[in-house]
Length: 70
Image (cartoon, rainbow, N blue to C red):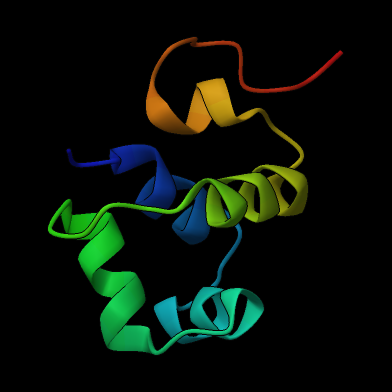
């Protein structure tokens, strides 16, 4: 499953794949596979990204269009 929002949020925050990979403790190539949908993202990484971007896991995976947590 491709998570377009991962790439969109990263670019909106002027970050490189390497920056986010470092945050998650993985390689840039591994993170790239998440954005492409070629690798399943572990829930702990989704939770880290949701906190980092101040959004919800539901938003990251496309279950809601509400970007910001109230």
